[in-house]
Length: 205
Ligand SMILES: N[C@@H](CCC(=O)N[C@@H](CS)C(=O)NCC(=O)O)C(=O)O
Image 1 (cartoon, rainbow, N blue to C red):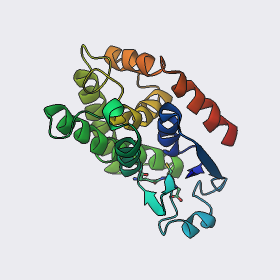
Image 2 (cartoon, helix red, strand yellow; image 1 turned 90 degrees about the vertical axis):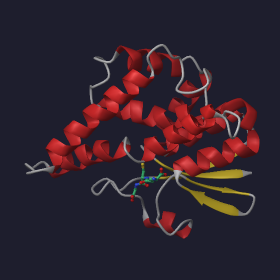
Image 3 (cartoon, rainbow, N blue to C red; image 1 turned 45 degrees about the horizontal axis):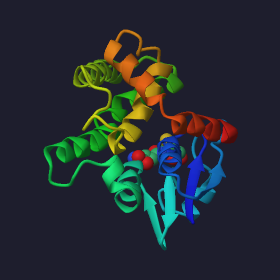
């Protein structure tokens, strides 16, 4: 059975949602962040050298990185349902969104979170993060104009990945000025598995 090494309040929620949507059996192995440092406990390093979450174990493999896990699970268990056809134009877009979620999109959001944890003025980083966050949000909003989902008019791996970005933007109070993002967030909520993932995540927080 698939094991998901899940850290509370983390990107691992993407994988919980995906596993729920796939409807396959899995076991959650929970870990709690340190209340002061907010870092993962050292036991996670026994599973993967980086000691981060999510990590899954399946078929004798240990797989890290939420984007790679998303692609692996979809390819193995439901490629036709949650991915465009490989080699198609949609597939290129799909791949772009999966990478975007863990590169251009997450970086400024994390910087902003770290600055607020430090609680002091910065010369450069805050201005950089704010400008980049504005770019990320408006890019996403424009890309979702007239669309229900990011790619191929169906729920795909791209949406599982971007859902976490939407959650951070929402928690930062920046979603409401972007009607396409608000509509997209509502669309994701039409999936029962999305709410199930919320409940499961909350049960470990
Ligand atoms: N790029 C990785 C990032 C993994 C990551 O940084 N996870 C965070 C939780 S969202 C973590 O484990 N933080 C605790 C730590 O670094 O100690 C992914 O997409 O899975």
